[in-house]
Image: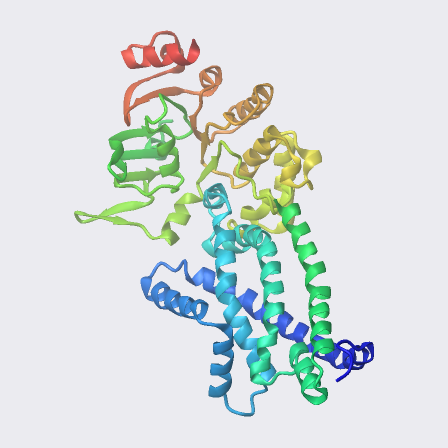
Length: 214
Length: 261
């Protein structure tokens, strides 16, 4: 045992943590890409005129939001055939989970586009699809950028849940190191610092974006 | 006009009803606008003037009655005794003849001035981009905005935005142009510029125009006929000279006294 803190161990574990960080960032980027695209489709489908689309979709979205990410990860992991890599399950579950939140960001972004924009599009006799693509979505998506940034940070911080499905991201790497050496302090401290080193600058970037868009 | 086709009014309202919830704004309104006429709608706020323009632009749904454009059913029609809504696809054919300029301009902020103007000529009328740009440049020259062609719309003053909005509406080559309090959101010193642009358009085209305005002097200069509205009904209609100097109806007298001072 000896010292509570050993710089030696901290340096020793760092390469493994950095390899884990790459997986963490991969999961966040791929997860956010899925969440951004699927979230937009959910937001658009929620505007469907028929209740046959809206009601079941609302149920699914609420269900995903009201149950823990950890439970969803393990559940899908256990149901999936064994040849599906854990990381792929991670991408999908993170992506779908956050898509339900992103859809809310898109909804707000779409509703923030002034009515006058729709009216001008009608007055110019634009087709419905063209109005969405050329007028509404470009303005709505601009409104959603800060929300997207905040959820990306939030997802990034939740990637340690991937531990539960044996994906070796940063936290899992630290756990493995700890289990092998019986010293967790250095590895977990470094994990915390690495998370901070990525999240904090990103949050500053998001804040600047918010100010610019305000 | 005396030709047969000239006898068909550009706009015809037949027993038009418009309700917002329990609030009846128009209750069986009838009027028509001959081809090429310029009509000013005046009256106190809430009298239904703007609703008429918005119905003509299909920004509101009719509650009853019919609107005909060049004699063609627009948003609703009778099939036998049944009053039915016309689907969007058919509405679009007729809507191509109608254009509108708004109080708040409503330019698309994600597009440049030029892009705002060529958007629908290219994507709705199917013009080639080159042709649409050439037309847009001609219109920008007409409204005195040539040098702002590639600007973002948020770099423009209110008066400049409104001139672009006028060019954008004209780029669709409308037969009918609806002007909804187009100078109400502008600083007083800018109003004359925008009205000058509209006056020139009125003098150099034969577009049928329906305007709602508080600029009585302008109404007097450009319109052929003035309709005074109160509570969703036309209480008086006359040529501008008569309406503004010698109104007959008591409500018109009160209203004009209030706005002209």
